[in-house]
Length: 229
Image (cartoon, rainbow, N blue to C red; front, side, top):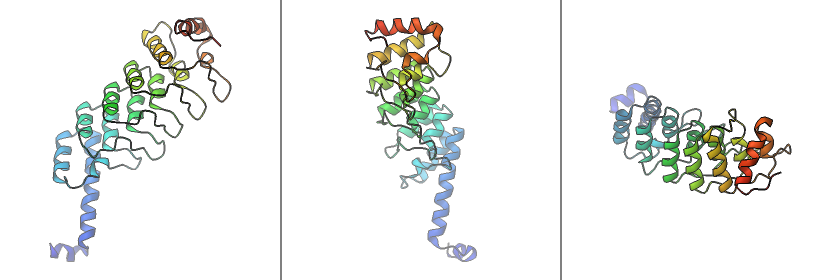
């Protein structure tokens, strides 16, 4: 070992730092490609390093986030099983949490697991969008229901003043005949979503739907005993 330090002109602390950096790179690689067995072995070999599971890449993505992006259920469950995992870490620029990323990708299983593990339900990204807004935008009924059950704020607003209900009526083309869309709107209304709120440009939720569907949406609002604006 002494000869290694002399040949490379490294101090012991520098060598150990280099080894730690290598371990961090490996856990990110294993998470990206879903190499679960290798990840388990790496963490076992570095069991004293409680920060390794929360390593972030150059964009701020953690092993948990990378597993969610690749939709690797087994890897997600494995990472969430670690007591030291920080499920509320945020990416560097867009400030997205694992929960927001799961909703963005429509992964309702990950959403449920994260909420059970204590993820902050109403945390926001750089645009002040919540996980519920992303779930509504992507028409993920199961994710919306899980978030509402976890007491998500249906009236929280993003940087443009938009609410989850507004996102439910925009985003992907809205089709009033689609059962998922109907369920999401009803879930939001039952959770206390207000149709009276307006965004920064003065538009209400009703203004976000197509004119051809306005009458249908008004009926849905009336069914929920909400006043029509």
